[in-house]
Picture (cartoon, rainbow, N blue to C red):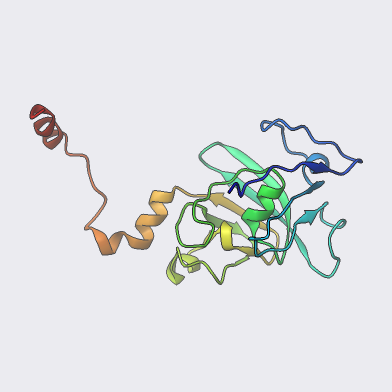
Length: 183
């Protein structure tokens, strides 16, 4: 089942390029509706900007994601009752993820400013949450937020490393040469 469906219905006021390399601008990325499947728990996302196209009773927050791996900055709006990752995908913004249930560290970010409510984030400890880490797949914005993506292995090490090893594994060139010599 393909859970990442590109937007296919556009507001006639604002047509968006279907190119995945299209640049961001508020006028071309916020007029998108996402088709949902019956297996999704969230209600459909229909974000048209910070003031229009969504229930005025639900606050909408500006999210800025700095992607360290690709050197990109994504800016988009998310209603307070929607997951950040799901809303980003509905606006054709590609962010890292794996489990979508808050159990891994693939979508981990470091919060630079703002607040994210994440009651279902099992993949990071209370200690890491207090240090500003969050998971986008199960994170709800409670204010305008600026985050920076993190290396999954680094966050995993911070979360679980002290339980499984005495430190990061270092490459042993001599052992590799011995092992390769046996072949």
